[in-house]
Amino acid sequence: MKLLKRIWRYFEKYKLYIILSFLFSLIVAASNGATAYIIKPALDGIFINKDREKLIYMPILIIAIYLIKGTFRFLQNYLMRKTGQKVVEAIRNDLYDKIIMLPLKFFSQSSTGMLMSRITNDVNLMQSSIPSFVTGIRECFSILGLAAVVLYQDPYLGTFALFVLPIIVLPIVKIGEKIKKYSKKGQHKMGDLSSVLQETFSGIKVVKAFVMEEKEKEKFRKHNATFVKYELKRMIYNEISSPLMELIGAIGIALVVYYGGLKVINGESTPGTFFSFMAAIAMMYDPFKRINSANNAVQAAIGAAERVFEVMDTHNEILENDGTLECDARNKIIEFKNVYFRYDNNERYVLENINLKVEPGTTVALVGSSGAGKSTFVNLIPRFYDVTGGAIYIGGTDIREFKVYSLRKNIGIVSQEPFLFNDTIKNNIAYGAENITEEDIINAAKAAYAHDFITELPNGYDTVIGERGVRLSGGQRQRITIARALIKNPPILILDEATSALDTEAEKIVQKALENLMKGRTSFVIAHRLSTILNADIIVVLKDGKIEATGKHTELLEKSPTYKKLYQMQFQDGE
Image 1 (cartoon, rainbow, N blue to C red):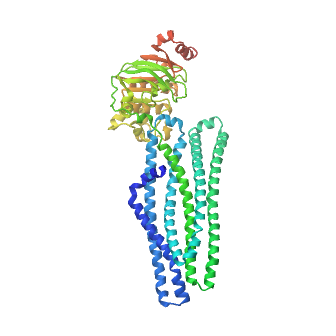
Image 2: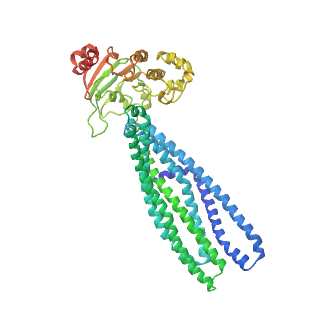
Image 3: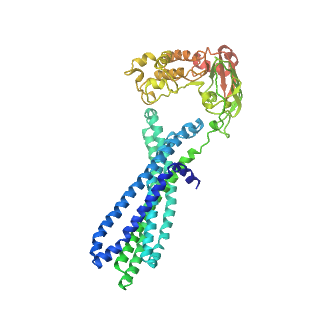
């Protein structure tokens, strides 16, 4: 019931369309009843009593009935399909809005394929059920109209015939429950299937490099077989429902034929009355079959809706605890005070008792072995995750008191794996910036040492660079992201191993671009190569989530075993 109330909130906006659609359904239902009713005067009047007057107006009446029925059926279908399309559009928009606003923690726990399946497959299933729902409503009215004709023609026999109807309803309900169950499981497996596809295609280079095509094919087949298993179960219940209903209906009609035929033979009823009665009965069982099919589709859609609203109900801990202050981090001290962090309550702390004070314009380098907590450290600054204990301050204010988006506008990020959109270079550089001129874009590109290679491309700044910037080299992609950060002009900068994936030549160029980017900013640099941070103002050595030591390069060689070991591995072994 709660789910239906939530779905109704989307339909509420289109109440007028729905009311008109119901009225048109009543007219269609009345037309069905009229079609069955006129069989009696047509058969008795024309074929038995040979009434010429009825021979003239009966065909006209039949055409008029079907014209009215067809017109209002079209109007009803159009209004409900339009309503359905608009409702599904709103649901899809709200779902996307919800997903894109969720914190990084949600995305780390959810596969891309699953999220894509929610927005596409699940919502499409909801959309396809709306015409079925319309059909179900219309057929219910048709059954009521035909039932009235049946009872009017022969109350006693009509009561007997209608007694069979509850027997038909029972399998509809039971089968619908099974279809909902297996449809929901099938959609879940379709999400897994989408995840496998997304993962395989994104990592196709790795798959081929390690000759894992056969292994990936086996994985896909396994997930595909599981999906088909649930689809087959759903199909079994879907297909068995129609023959079962037909059998129950046939038994009812057989009994009616026997009893009604006996009344005609005994002179207690006319052939016209009997055939009008039989037509109504036959027309009544047909809507039940369509209601059954509609119910199956609606039950599958309810399963999909439950999956959609599961995502809608996901909590956003970051925005639910949003601050109220505007953030201006320029010339402000950044301070970590007794910071603790873990991803889940049952896990160990990734960071413990972190205390660090950073003056404005300082370059802070974070070093340590893999898993020491470097990336987690910088991810806390823009509140991609919230601290578990302690606090981070900017200018003496806890960052949780700032509006999240105001805080993030003060922070620029250049990561190890630069992400670019399948768009022009110009739009990639200007991404997220406001009131930017073409001159600003070119100046940022020049400062990032990207202007020269951009101008050599076929369409210059208007060159579309493909998905994830696949048409550019690693160094070129990185320089575009640096230009993007320059356009943003943030007072705080996070460089997450920005040169670790580049060759020596590309690294030198990118390093120059980074130096331009870091001027006058408070920078947090995660260093893969110590050679890039030897001149940092503060080097922070992390070990097992704790700060082992802080200081300059020469100091740390003396007092930090971890730093000395890393230095020896990279420099002395390299020599």
